[in-house]
Amino acid sequence: MPERRVTVASKVGLHARPAALLAKAAAGQPVKVTIRKDDGQPVEAASVLGLMTLGAMHGDEVVLAADGDGAEAALEAIAEIIATDLDEG
Image (cartoon, rainbow, N blue to C red):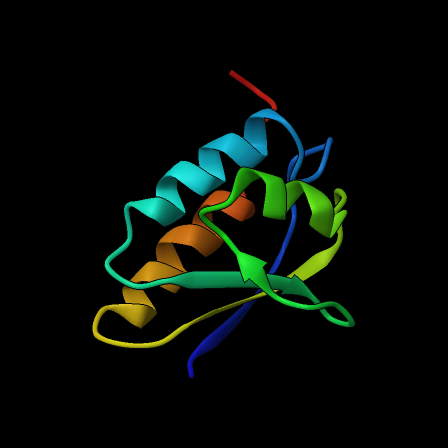
């Protein structure tokens, strides 16, 4: 299963607006994407509640995983969102 490590860029972490934007993007992917902190259990990236329970803060590294056709492209798309400061705008 392909994985991608990425650092959370949003100043509030994956909470509120950034979590909602990330969940919406993950739900639009052709494969299920999971996200976890190094020592934690994976949650579905398409779940706002799951993202918020991760407790991923600004500067934390998270691990994305996906499997199936389009997994690499899905991981790239989601990683790009996490690496962007979604608090601005």
